[in-house]
Amino acid sequence: MGLKDIKIRMQAIKKTASITQAMHNIALSKIRKSTDLLNHSHTFMEDIHHVLIYANRNLDEKNRLTSANDGDKKLFILVTSDRGLAGSYHSQLFKAFLQDIKDLDKENFQVFVIGKKGFYFAQKHKLPLVNQEIIYNRDDITTMFFRHYASLIKDVFLKGFIDQVMIYHNHYINTATQEVNKEIILPLIFNEEDVENEQYIYDESPEDVLDKTMNVYVESRIFEAVADAKLSEHASRMIAMKNATDNANDIVEQLAVVYHRERQREITNEIIDVVNGANV
Image (cartoon, rainbow, N blue to C red):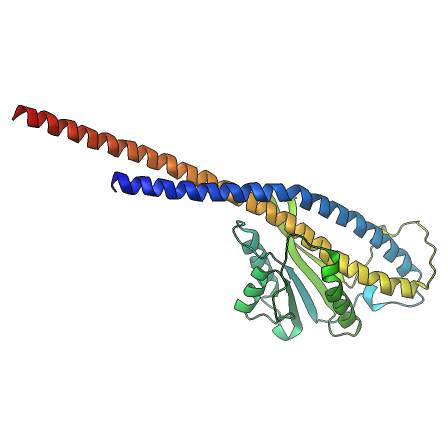
């Protein structure tokens, strides 16, 4: 490889490094906002949970939304992103999901996908998709965006078309670690330790409170998972872009050594030619 070729390659890699560094900085800038959003979501879900516990305790009869059943019809909500370049963010999620459904009959489950990457993944593996078009997972997420879907999910569950709703997403642990989280959101089964002594005064019956609050619960639970996944995405992309930048800089340094060695060799050859010419 000549000096010109080495120099061109170094310039190309430096440009790549500048791009990955910019992507790293963008992801870093989004982490704080996503962290605040997730923390607010956790707080809101705790309050919703308290209301649901009290309403469920005062029901005259069992409600399908909060009672275990023996049905085998499942709905999986798979939360992914629209973009790649995020390390193992998607591969670990898809691997875990495929592992869990490998023994299931496709007639007994459906998949509701959020995010472009997940939509194409589901199409590739011929999974029974609920949504026939992409539901984009943008950075500026709001609960309003999921209100329609949450209402539909609750309605089909109440009508018995599905017996369990499970959500899959990447869970943020710290900047360097994200793990796949899967959780059943319907039916919502309360543990004994969930029961608290808080008292609420309702203007409506516990049945009406449970029914209306469940709309907010499903909507907010999806939002919470998306917020968690979004924070995980930014952290994973930040680490991936940092590694890419570091690797690019290492290659540039290695090429610089080769470049100077080759340049020194050419200078030496030129000196030898001059000396030999002078001796002729």
